[in-house]
Image (cartoon, rainbow, N blue to C red):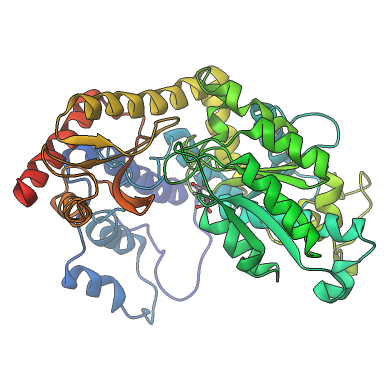
Length: 493
Ligand SMILES: *Cc1c(COP(=O)(O)O)cnc(C)c1O
């Protein structure tokens, strides 16, 4: 890597156009080399102690390093040890590779570096458009609806539940922003026991405690039991609690199960409860005709958490909270100190500020990478992407069904397949299976040919594969099956 002339030494100096271009070209060169080279490398390699030390022990240089040194360090120590999700045989958690156009747009967003708190500049309008597109994908679009980009699904859920809590208190004649929780009854929320941990974290942060989440049992397919929901709400009301919110899963993190959103929406309408849908995994699958009927009732939610940095491959971080009534979000968050006051539509004010609809004041330009990714894919391309992800999981499920030593652990609805190694003659309840399958996951992770993680389903350990990489093929899936059965056979024959 070459140094940019005169860019070291005390304090930053403005660079010439030529030097700026050289600087960014070096980064582009590294980025392209990185993304193209991943396929030939192990999916994942742990850091050695020396590699960790090279990063951890680095002192803050007294005088600045030339950019050439920065990039050389990056190439040697940083780009060489990635998380793994760029590889087509990375099937862990819910982390996709980035769409290249999103990566490029993210650089442009950094170059502009606006605050998307609000104002009358292009970034603000781009966020309105990109979130409108998400609202359209979920069927929630319409007058008064609103979308706000967040760091991810967790922040989206926290934001939605804050609005739910505020709206419930308002109904009860309590100003929770002024008085806190002291004037309220015990609030209770409802979700299946498959709900994501961010729901509990959100309730903790909202001062409700995670005990206020009633975790309801699921059926064999990991969907919430609507009858259990009904009796839990009735029991809580009888005891003087204040049920305020139901969280429905549009794709659970464990298995991709989609709750009966129709039943939940109707129940919430009847019971006057806020209906939040966690669509972090599944909302984008509204573009997959095989599952879109199950997802159509997202449109009836009060709020939906959408996570474009998962199935749509928008570079992290990019989540979104979509709400049916933007004013409820604004009611829960708007606090405009005098130094920020503008008049909407007048002068530099622009539309109502995004910072009035969430917790953040200075906000990054996430909309650029989201807008560019969606604009480039188009509705058809985005649909093809999620359909590919979902069909890979079904293809994996067939390989599992066909293999005598593999057992499915959950139905495949979206892009997640859960299974385990269980050779002939080993009873389903044999506890050795948990240890064996855990060992398989550990071995695969350290060997680097294919990367999966595990989870617990009905108390049993399951191997969990999420197929989000657009470049994953049937032969990658076959590698997974071969590796699991090879290591499994070594474990228990
Ligand atoms: C990933 C995930 C979340 C949390 O989203 P982050 O983007 O990781 O904050 C919430 N719910 C489900 C179902 C998820 O899969």
